Amino acid sequence: MPAFVPDLPVLLAFAVAAFVLAVTPGPDMALFVSRTMSFGRGHGFATVMGAVTGIAVHTTLVAFGVSVLIVAAPAAFWVLKIVGALYLVWLAVQAIRSGGGLLVGRQSAGLPSLGQSFMTGLGINLTNPKVALFFVTFLPQFVSASDPAASAKLLFLGAEFVLVSLPVVVGVVLAAEWLTTTLREKEWVSRALNWSFAAVFMAFAVTILLAEGRK
Image (cartoon, rainbow, N blue to C red; front, side, top):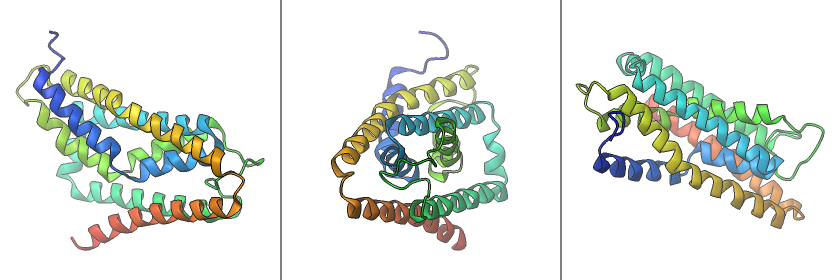
């Protein structure tokens, strides 16, 4: 087996951890659903790809030790979490604004580009404390610091994380598309879903801010 491939028990243990994180509701999953229901499957997948790119960034930072600086400098990580919280607040406002970017079933001239959906997915992933903490604190536990192939193994585990979580988020996007097709004719349902998405984003933002306030 190549040196950059972790042992089978490590691969299996990490796959379980990655799956648990993938199925745990979070702002990223809510964004995949809302983007799909707003603008269609293509935008849902573009948002997913943005999040996948964010995972690649997290993995690369961990693999080459840059993320250690975030742990060593609590203020830097605090800023990351506050930025993430404010971004979620912005998404919540967009969800309920007239003409906002997350309104369910609204196919208008204000339709964003796939690139904008990609960047939204990237932004929410990079500022998601749950994902950042997972990669900074948990991912390195699966590799020995004295292993000469540690960086390569971390990159391999990052790729494994994508492979494990991708079927989950693809299923979420397809389910959201089906739900949109089913409910698009009911305006009151669309409005209720918009407010629900806003509440979800705001709840995650408040959770982050309150957690920081107690420290």
